[in-house]
Image 1 (tube, rainbow, N blue to C red):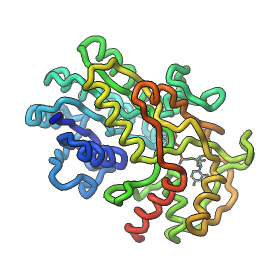
Image 2: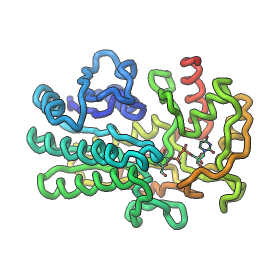
Image 3: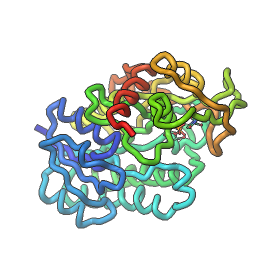
Length: 323
Ligand code: UFG
């Protein structure tokens, strides 16, 4: 049985990946500093090390104690406006943290890394559909810090004989169908949980940011993907490396997009949702969609859960966390 270290495994995406790894009979250990992660999201029986990737001693303790076959890293700071205010902490965590993870992998001879990255590395793609080899010109410190980490991983792979899969996420949402995990945060900024909180009466009508974009209904289009579909892709990525395939960078999306108004309409088929028309939010590209050709070709993966399941599962999860 292969043993996997999931860094950031107490967080939203990491915890869904842990569930999927266990379902597929991997042995799992988690390292998380619990800054945005939650102990309760780590399943019973999975060892949790509370520690920080920017502290080499914390990493060393895990790598020394657990002889892991692969590392999956989800531990990142991810809030775009915060990154503009605090670029130093974003680079410290998202770049220096990754440098130390690589250092530990080299010291302890761990050869496989599955790394979570973001569509933000592309910046503002010209036609809105991102291919993996497109130009990458990030427009904020968050995207820059993740791109710098990607590049460091690539250089390290050449120098130290490591292999990697870098996954670039688009709009991840939804919750585990058995409600074992979901997005928990006091500072929600993403549209799906804001919608479901409003549907549940935890907040008032949502504000739709901008009606004058060059899209059919004037609102922004995004590629929404269910967190469980995303988790499954990670296990495929891990197996791909364990089977000796060569390193790759892969978008995780659906090749299709929905506008904010389409989301609102879908939500209204589940429970009543009202909205107000707000101004544009700074830095939002009109359209952001992932080409998913490469994911299909290399991993034989594509998402299977639709927009309704994304909204419904988040709704059900949020209902269990009544405010
Ligand atoms: N939106 C609203 N009202 C809200 C919140 C969001 O209308 O209250 C709109 C946004 O303007 C945008 C869409 O809903 O058009 C989606 O916004 P999110 O904040 O949910 O997600 P983003 O597309 O901004 O963010 C995603 C990832 C980030 C990544 C970014 C890259 O979640 O991690 O794409 O551009 F950095």
